[in-house]
Figure (cartoon, rainbow, N blue to C red):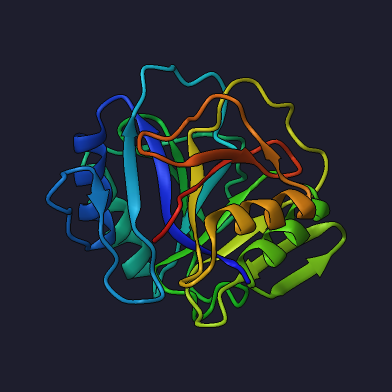
Length: 237
């Protein structure tokens, strides 16, 4: 019994515009709702943009890592992002570091990783959701999704679907104190044939909590992982 990851939900002041940006950057299509960036294959997940009037108060708890096959490919991705409305971003990175930090049109951080990065080899173009988080939360999500820990060192953890695709990683302490809702959260659904109530109880037993006010824009149970990060559990996929 596990949950399935059905989408990365991303809050935005203009969800349609941000969906167009990320679809253009990732070479994906936008769904008929104009707010969902569709996957290209079964190991990718949709990115669903949800309208929100809440302003950004801090760097995102999660940011995305894109990979490169060569220096020219990295430059091409950066140029495409800038042409779509992105911008360079200074977060204190050193000149000798190979990755390039950018922001999407609403200021959400992401990195274009240098070619030859062995850790992200084989993960695809959208290779990682990277963020703050304890080892406990990495273990929680491994159990919740049935994804093995593919990195577990010095309190840093990462999980990856057995099918491959993007990793989800947590950097360990120090963890930035929470202030307000996260801009990104995971949308889950029970595995086919699994009762939604039973899956919610399983997640609670793993260390999740149920939130009183739903942060989802469709019928779902609002929950939080052991670090307090929100996620939504839908009744069925």
